[in-house]
Image (cartoon, rainbow, N blue to C red; front, top):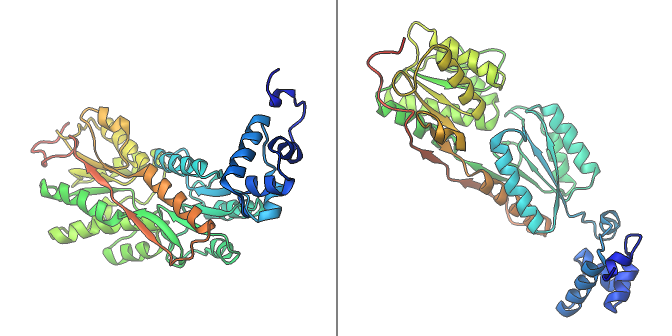
Length: 368
């Protein structure tokens, strides 16, 4: 074998890197640990030697020396969800470029699993946290507050937690929903189904109760429903609780909920869906009743996907900057780890309504 790396039966040590680079062990430690003062020329020499030997740093030893593990903890609601997959791509790519590893945990929208996940990540001594929290407005978030008190920076993504004064990266969910529902209203729709609203065991029977639910809801759920209500109010359309679903968030529940609304004596002429599974569930419900998009009923949904563009007709969807959300969150977190002490920032990124063909004027005759 020709390379130094191939001569090693065991992993090379920091002493061997120092010998290959012609410098002391302390210089190698400062260079590879990214702390202290090292000249550019010496750094380049050490890095060449480390690469040639195939040296892999001992992250535990480095963390004991520097207090930094070069690891980010990522807590997302559902990594299988296409939205969070896109967010994760932005986080992981940005972390990798900055020399960080990421530990990713999924909570399935359960606050108790989120608390457990934060405990696991803190035990692993992550340098910071990106969290899409499952906490509603009134929930206990001491697990996040305690992490911040320990000096672990936290960046919230996709959802805000009102009681935490920390960095966040979101879109304007309320305005995105108001704009989409407003578009349906301008096409003459007044019976607009909302799928799905905040999960609750006690569905609202009037607008006052709906606002009570909003006060306790997951932030993004609540903001999207507020946007829906804003659009109705601006158009003078009475709010009908029968047109808002409150179900556990899965495709089957969405199908049953939308089917129930389609069976009403005065059914909706349009549907606004707030997540991918709600959209798919609504499409199943429409197919079961032989209702055709655009000809019989209109639909606008959240979270544009490649499959939405190849549907027949193509779906009009709200496009979120998924990867950019992750990128901005990771950059903000790494800046905090690097010592940024400026006031907490709320980054609000733009969403886009991608107009296609699943929404139009109220049909004169419903499909049978």
